[in-house]
Image: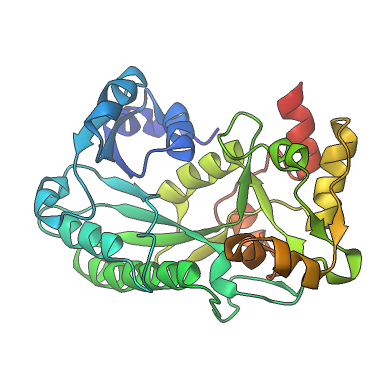
Length: 308
């Protein structure tokens, strides 16, 4: 787990961290920050306040779709982790715009980290590349993330000049963990959902939820101004081979293989969007700039460890 150097522990205990979008990953981040930090979390649901308090988090009621209620966020925290998703429609992200506008009204955060997605690259046809690759979003879902990234970078440049704030971006691939809702690949295999035939298959990218939480923590202290980092593990695997491995490892039937034409006829547009983009990611910045050593460098290690 990431911690500041021992000589800074007294100061670290006083650090206030605001998490916007404190779901599964956010709560894993909290586990690594407390008790050295006071953690606050924005939630739009009063029903979640009690469960957040039980984790030692100070809940703040507010809705990113209602900017008039966000003014009190300004100056509350010295570091901000933004993991809230954009709206489900459109090509822009007003939620991020509302959050950033609220944060500049009073006080100044030392660091802001935005959790984006590797979907902003679109289909790279299996190429291996680093964070300097041009963006080519192919869906409105990805275009909303591109819009959010642009807003974070613009805000970060202004705040860096004004008060020295560091705004950085983590581009995140598929998140897995057996104890994560929706992150257990066995669920898909048990359903018998098809994968593409080998000649049509795509490379897919992954990060264990615990390693992602540690990457978020590291970025809050070590993220460079305006920097983008791939929060991805070392796995280079095609999607069908990944689910074949899951099936074999857990004693399940392998998923059926279908052609791309057959998949188009039977799968939803959202499912097909994940089967239409192939890329491999360099993650050296994660290791050298954020100085993160992955606990689960491959999905094989991560899933085997989770089961044990």
